[in-house]
Length: 182
Length: 68
Image 1 (cartoon, rainbow over the protein chains, first blue to last red):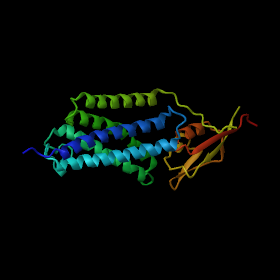
Image 2: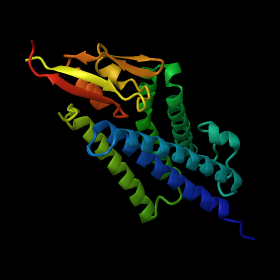
Image 3: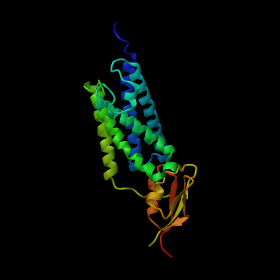
Image 4: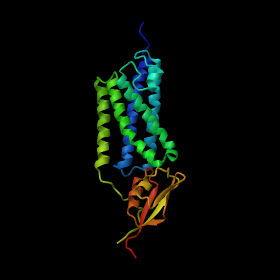
């Protein structure tokens, strides 16, 4: 008898959803820093950036829960929290575990920023690049849809857009003017 | 030619990110998780501080173009 594929389908869909939301959150963060669209209100972009990250974390939680409930790759609860403990593609799964844990830490650090210090919070926020890189490696190497053109295109588009936005942030000259009209 | 800038912070928007303090520590500080600024400054870095605010909570206005 064929196994019910429901949780396997949910695991794959939620993984790709989490990656898409993470990408969108990173892009919103980069838009906030480099301000290519001056008409956007910074507060709205900040709220969007944080909300996308929260939705991404929710999708990661669904991804992990679905993998536990599914029997295709047989992951244990320990494998979801301890990098390298998975029997299935351990290095690739470890990249996903590290990305998820760092993502949670960076998101939670916002609420703890007065306790850990604003500068430490901002230093920790640089981990966003590592999170995106680890999530990309995880998706490409652990995902079973990577060989499909639509999935590979998704990874390529995400990587290309984040690299382009990060380059814009690094290379574009800062704009200092913010003056109230006389 | 020393411009003087008036600094205003919208406290309803400020979330205490501290980017302003990093940019212009002479003009800004954090108190109880909220940015506080001097009323006026001739330091042009206050413009960078306003630009760096993730909430857009800082308004800097040039109130004098020439030094007295």
